[in-house]
Length: 184
Image 1: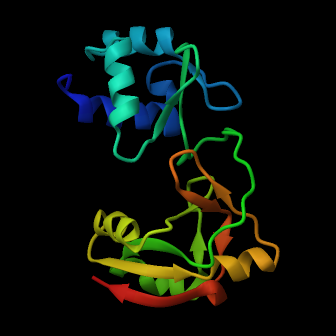
Image 2: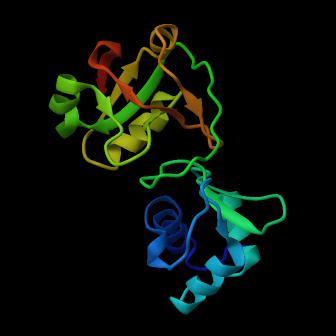
């Protein structure tokens, strides 16, 4: 099964569940969950052809594993990347020694001046793989991969979380914890 318009549905779910639930006139609970029946009904009114198998397909096949259904398939939420205030119940974890952040070359001077900031999101997003960071950076221009001294940060009291889809999250990365830039 590969329902039509999966990419369009996935992008719309990202918009609604991570940034603007008001686009559909839905309310997320404090943990970011939306009632699935209401979400699908309102998406259908906007012209989306969605049902539970389609939503399940999007959840299961999203290459970034952005979404999660609850065990009863009654609710859906985004795993991370929110610009709205929700608590997706992340658990603090010890990160690996090094993590990576992908950005565009045009952002380097600002990062070198003030480090990595969460900007309009709840956390700075980091990867445990250089390739993933490079892919992220390439979405915004010529990619640059920054090495984050995550183990040192953690030892010095910084908090890290690992989202359900494998993205490492922290509040900020000061300049002194950034190392070698790799242009690709």
